[in-house]
Length: 486
Image 1 (tube, rainbow, N blue to C red):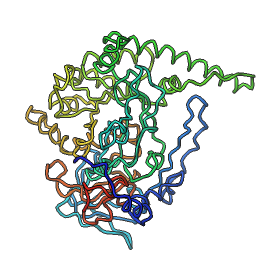
Image 2: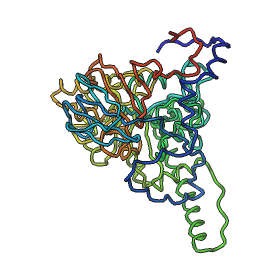
Image 3: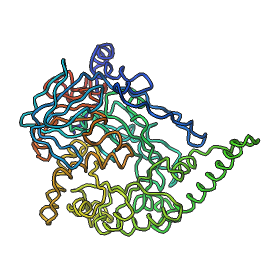
Image 4: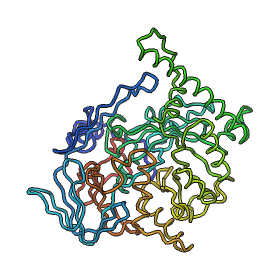
């Protein structure tokens, strides 16, 4: 991504704000509080009980899909992320959902038909570890909003309250086929705060991007980052044992906090008089973990530390949804398979600090061969634009080592498995009837370095189209900038 100048033309900016089309026109579609109606014939969703005060969600999604006419892509090679490849296949999208995938699909009358001859179709790419919007471009101090870098315990902060929807890299990620992403706080602290899952649509507010009904995640970090950050300031934690002690002390507090709220709710249910405990935003998040409502995403590199963190989870009865970065995960592949943890990692990043020294490109393939749910993530602004290529590197490294993971499985590393890490695999991540129509049409095999995401659909709405400049949305911030102008 090129450097973006902070200079801008005030007149161009002003004219743009009142112009029809582009980002604001699309964002206007996201101003109401619910998804578009489900296709006719779908069963109504069961009512959701009102949450207890301790796990209330006061910042609801207002995401609404854009216009999505019936669309069928025909004659394409399709990787469904269910372990199946369909040659000369078709996919039908209607009302924002996938209706059918196969070789004998009839286009409804009036449907948009796209010829996919020689091209490939995959689910939308999903990044299970992103910092877009919280470490926004341009990378200046004014955009450094991903780490509440003042205390090892900042479970009370929420990443969504830092996200800048105008981050220009959202657009660039969309050009790489990315349709959904988990945006996490950074890893400076033991407890970094809540992460949020978003749809990668042009928007003005973060609420317009929030993935409806996706669970929250809690970001925690072991290893060098927290011990180095705070040990250098002469405070705990200064060692790895200090890290673990900090986790344990805080989970003890969280368990007590949850117990008090449970006692209060039991009294209320019986009609007894009861005074609610004082809310604590950090302990509220941790209590949500202990109740199974919030997923744990653990930044952790070394195999031995992952094993220790699994024991911490056992001690306090919570599950670690995924280890992130996890460059030594291959050393404990059997343990991770038994514990049913996912791993979100890279192929090519290593050696930038001591705990990253034993990284190998074969990590993902080794994990997959042991039955571990593995995903390829970005963690930064450039890699999110080419997650398909990073996956190809990991796939090729495995093959050189004699681990032949088929492409039909490897596509899950940036689709279905990432969705699983985020707790939304029942809604997106694979091309199956009833799921969200998050779809990418590639110019060629997506594992080719030459592949281009020609058309990107989110809930059936065409949000990126290389053949139509009006469908290449740009950040409001970019308008009037000397870089990136036509």
